[in-house]
Length: 202
Image (cartoon, rainbow, N blue to C red; front, side):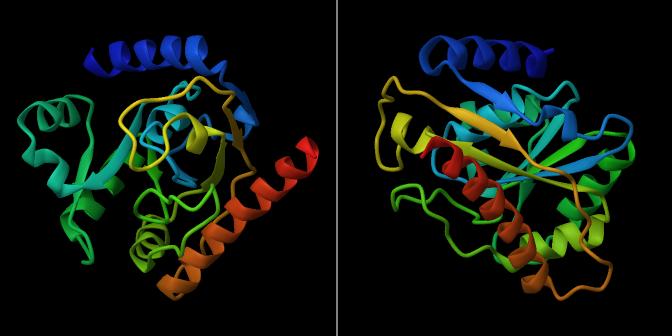
């Protein structure tokens, strides 16, 4: 219930203030679990990635977010999976696998944290490659365009601006692939998706 209410509120607000649009939603698998892997330039990104998906999504977020009583309660209520940074968090992996088997989607941000360099990309974390390789589910690259202008890192207020969300075609990370190589592959797919739509704007 909390998840559905939160999703509806975020959808209305994002439409109202940012006129947010989406392309490629048809690429999101309908019959199986999947991973949405997105760039990350704003605290709005998790909501933006999720509001167009008909299936329930699970977000993996750093464990420290749960230390705030209010935020921690909300994260638990909507099913956020806490993950320990800079470790191979097996408990988080097992929980993600369980949810994928139930047909849910998992949202990952390969860069690990928000970037604040004008919307460009950061180096992906090997841990993301580890998760994608072990989970074995289709990965859908996602590119969020414009959220760095709406709510850039380091600011507490948002600005009214246009935001678009693009979903690319799903692909698989091969079993046994080296984890940093897998993370680079995922980030490369996001970059290609970004380049494609940036060219359309120019």
